[in-house]
Length: 217
Picture (cartoon, rainbow, N blue to C red):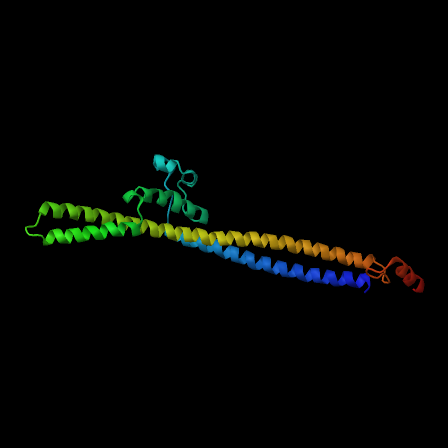
């Protein structure tokens, strides 16, 4: 096979690969844009605003991102992660000793059983009933608070995770564009090399055979 023919074939293949990489980059960029816009719109609709710097507690001031985002509306994935972990997560730790919604189910069920037994006792120990009622109401309220906090935290972290897919897609798009550009340059160099290479020059032909080809030409 002639060297020029081989260069042209490789160059055409390189241009095709470059085109595919550019198309892949466009698709990834579109996905990244959709993810970022979707997350922004959904979070903005919740109308969540970070506490202002002067209203932060000492515990909250120890969270760097809460200070950084102080007073801002929550509209990005990174902000959602901060609010979920460093604000909601921080306050959940101080509620019911840091127990989760599932963990509070056991104590709540136990208190309900104890209260039912106390109400059936004869005679009824009203003081005990009142005490168990107070404990049950406290645990129930704590469990509802934890449930709401965990739910919102989970939704915010889901939004953060979705935004990270958008970030990764944007990074992949950049790699695709760079690789496509590199392949395009290599293909152009290949075409230039094919143009300056003699038509009679073969590929991987021994020197003596090349000389004979030139003489015969």
